Image (cartoon, rainbow, N blue to C red; front, side):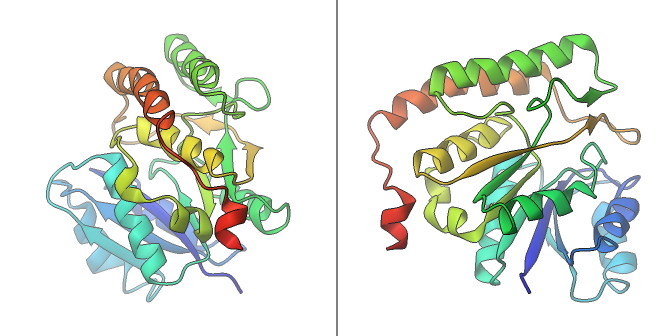
Length: 250
């Protein structure tokens, strides 16, 4: 049986944390959950420690950090935890139900059955599957992905997606210290680096639904970071060698 870890960074998710935890814990595939909380003043961490961890003993874990240190650094800390503790498949997911927890099972299947090294929950592999976003934000996200493909050549439709499954070999191969971005451009850089190393990437169609509770952390500045960071990332890649994963595995 595989060891599976879902990583969810949180900041002020008191309204969602109970429901999202229960939804992950009750899936047909056994998942463990790692919450990385950046000092939420609304008591998110206290709910996890005092109420939820006793209920889901040995399956719910938490790392508390001081202040908002960035999405990328949260995931990198989670990746380190996953590798240190022997997990086989590692998932990224939001706390706000914009990603349907049941789709974790589909991402898991894309890796374990279809042989993907990275499975992406894709909003754009079959049209545009986004619910409750303003049209301007849909267009900004969609054309950002087109831009990333044009600049980098990566054959991924949803390059900014934050709902993913990695086989541990991907995280072992990608040196987290070489990942430069800490915001949403982190999502692009991880996919790009995995692709450059020759890992198999599969997109699984999902429907993305804007959060119903709590406040969104998204902003135009985040998209600007992703868009302008891509040029820097591409230029750096021209001077870096990526050993094919097949060589690393042999």
